[in-house]
Length: 395
Image 1 (cartoon, one colour):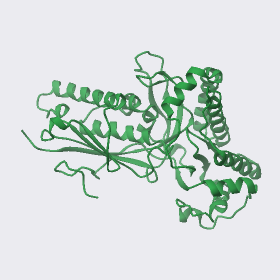
Image 2: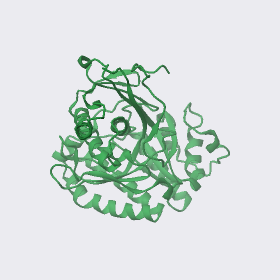
Image 3: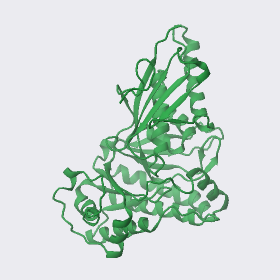
Image 4: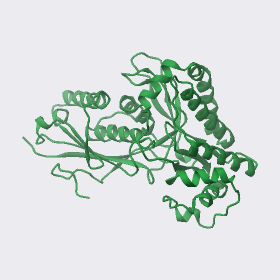
């Protein structure tokens, strides 16, 4: 028996949807009630790094394991198991076709993963996490699968993870087959098509959210009347307008759909019985700030969007950094907030002043910022979190 340890490492990005996924038509297969579209964010700022390793020398009695941010993590859940099962069966098919291949599908997996941002803080950590997990194991197993094929697997782990297998601007097509074989992601445009898209994230609370996305969305599906209108009319229209806006690099249109779709999503949450509130007073102050910035600029230069949590993600174009980032920086600079990039904020003037109530809420409620922009999909790396002997690498 060889004690060789096979390893593969990849990084995967966070994505923030501009047309939101909310609601499952099949909870077991993680099939959505509507299509969605997202922007992949730069991994220089937000990424998950995952090393997948396996060896005949790993004790079978230990089974598969995952170390997440240095802590053992439970992978016995149905979603993770579905991903592992599918990846293993694809590897086993390769081994059956070529007897010279090592039987990696039969070895226990040791997975080690690290985020460079707080997990479960409403920053789409599960999307980057499952995308990295699936991509790393696919690399380890040398699977010939395309990113779209892998997105089918990642989707079973975390719906939005299927969009993190691509860079740039990405759609998750809901599909209509009962078995989910057509519910997958594809790239609408590469990052290089519209490279000056930027995002300023206001982290309002890094605490774990009160109602998890999974339970929240199923309550909405079951009880909200507005939700039915959203999935039949609102989202299909938003998808069409958004794809055209991205193709034409029309920020005004991109921004309007982004804000309207976020509002529509949160309206269905409020229309859920009992209602679900993910946004708070600080979130609403960020909306007012964006409205004030756009009004003073005389055109739409900023677009807010909120996922299932209070953090604001504000999209803008690089040329409008002063109007957007400058405004927030000057409101927040007195507070002890990390995340500002000194090269980007140097010399920014406070061209726009905000209402003092809005400014006060932001100053008291934003704990940090993340300055980022559109970025690439998963990247294979030689940075390993598992040493050659199969133990977690010393870092």
